[in-house]
View 1 (cartoon, rainbow over the protein chains, first blue to last red):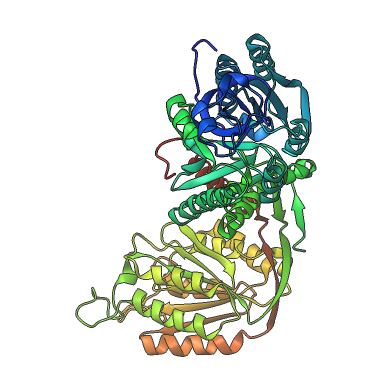
View 2 (tube, rainbow over the protein chains, first blue to last red):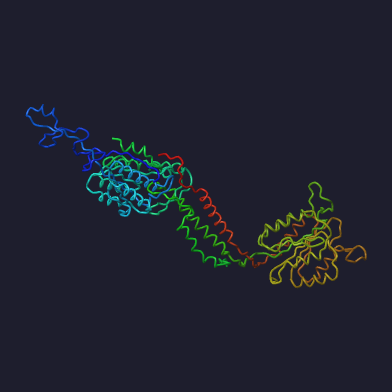
Length: 281
Length: 333
């Protein structure tokens, strides 16, 4: 993590928190953007009596101004460690994932948010997980532990356990995976995370979406180890690309009702582009 | 008979290796995050199976070839109707002349050409004969051994009207013709058909040898004497007292043949028509059944096995050359 990458993000929806921070929330407080007026008896803050509203009231009730409390939120990264994440094509997919986690850990703790890390394969990997913490040192240490792992899981079912470990408080969740999952698992995972503000970050590689036009291709599945021989030809290349497009449509459709739209990260992390997508309303 | 055999059967102990292609592919793996992204394809499955079978055949057929398979040779007994006939044909220079003793001119036919035409018809008519061909001029030459392959015999007869040369050394020709018969088949009907247009003197020593040989092999002798117009015949008495073999070699040869003690007939012909007539008579005389043994050669099958292995290997090499991997160039998404 030699270079410092800052990623900007904006949570969607109302987050309840006790800590004052950088994000809008449903909490009311004495500073920030004006929210509404409340009777003094309901919100007895004598320092913020709204004199004009009090005088205007025909019944002589006293009013107090209320402001939106800006709060800190919890940012969690859920990292898929199934074997497909170890794919090395145009880029080392797992390195990109680690780099992304390090950037999120740095960015979250910089603005006072807490950062949590949950790695999973067919179950959760406790060794590379971290409950949400405000400590930047602890967060970056967790990312270091993550980078020492090797993706070799044979499935990604642990995402459900990781979702359960997040707890019942709304959090901003970055689901970092290549989403080479079955459609059912994607649906289950997004359902389990529906409570949270979920941003699916999809890692794709140029190599897997650019099949050759001609030749014999002996493919090996990184997770199951099964092999398949393909006699590549233009028709099959077209089918391959169409299947890939169909997968993206399916992922977008599943995400549309349950989370943010999936964000594709191709080959390398582009922090500016990612920030624009994460701060979009 | 026709049994399949192997020279080195121990090579087949390695035959289980031929199953390896079912376990491993010859192509290098390209790891893909998930096969879900690769579409299923029937043609590819077919190609995959062909490659597996090619691997099996490449290993299996090589081992089979190394084992040296063959169909062992056998002796086949065959039956033919007719006789074993050796045609002993004069190739001396005078055979190139016509019956009139001239160089052929215009439509005229030389003695050799006439003999060729008539002998071929004779061979064709007697399809079951075993015929061998020998020729002689100064030295004898074996043209084809005794066999029932009519095509080979006809080809040999075709060659007799090539220009002949040199003299008529009849004794050595007869010795060769006799040597072509196998002594073990003495019970068969056998004949030497001597076709010549002249006679030579046989020296006394050769006379005794030939006589003994004829007695031993028990061969009938037919002499088809193509007489040139004006020359002395077989039966013609010499004009004077000169009775030496040098003066009338034909007559003395005839006398010698008669003294051999084997069935003998001489046909003195002065034209192509008479030649045909003489052969018709011989045809009538020689018609008993013949039993003979033909050896079938051993048939080597390893070349076939290696050819199969070569084809299979060529398919595998082609597949290897067509192998590609994934790379990141371009990309449609």
